[in-house]
Amino acid sequence: MTNHDIGSHYKYWLLLTVISLLSLSGCDDTFQPFQENDTYVFSIQGYLDASADTQWVRVGTVRQIIDEPPNPDGITVTLKDLESGETAVLKDSLIASLNVLSYWTTMEVKHDQSYEITAERTDGNKSRVTLTTPPEFPPLHIIFQGGIGVTPGVSIWIDDSIEHIADLQSVWYVNIIRETEVQRRIFTFPLRNTLEPSRSYGGTYTTVNDWDRELALIQQEVGMGAVVSVVNRQIFAASGGPEWNDDISSINDLEYFISGNNSNVENGLGYVVGVSIQWFHQDTCYGPDGSNAGPCVPEKPYWYP
Image (cartoon, rainbow, N blue to C red; front, side, top):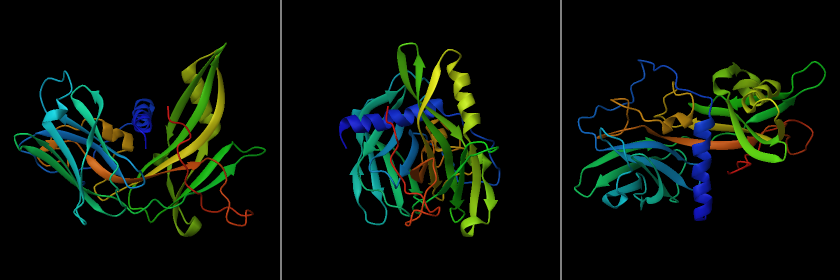
């Protein structure tokens, strides 16, 4: 992966965070994955994606005044595979936001495996977090819905063997045309909170995606006088590891600072989990013979900004 691809990947997720229509829901008092912290050294935020070839985490100093990024020369961030002992030193991406730095590595992260992320200062003070990635996200079943009297869209089925469905989004890639100007945009819509249990395919969660409703929301946002040309649609799906809090509505919310004791970082703040992310085309997926609906084959995101 080139430096350009790495930067594009980060910018894509930053854009998804900004344009996401999702928000954190209330916390369930019965969920207690957090550790009590007496000393806050660093904040560590983000996730490890076992389906990706590059991992990103955000590391910041914990201080009262947020003014500028910390000096990366005084910080070492490592990722350790707790089974094999393999360790990688993460690289500073030079992408910073206020008092937070972004670090990356191409070290392989496997499904259903435990890892430790450590951020350490030159004086030996450190923050660390341990997490476990989930099994590989299973294939979705997606079928187009349309015709006379039927609102166009797709029906989606997700295997109910997934312990934590961390995210499900409808992603639109569109061109916004205003006179001679053409602007490329990405819009996302939450679907995770619409899932319902079903007996289909041996046990699933299912939902129906309404394209007319989402297109109307896009048109409303871009305003009158603009033509919306749809280029592609995808489904973004993610499962979470055992540390995942089901009260969090989207993995995008992990980008937000989590204060106080709402943290699974030892001697620090923040929240880091393992995930498995997949992308699927919003259309009917067919089996090997091409005649009946079958499991969908994952694909890459259609656009990187």
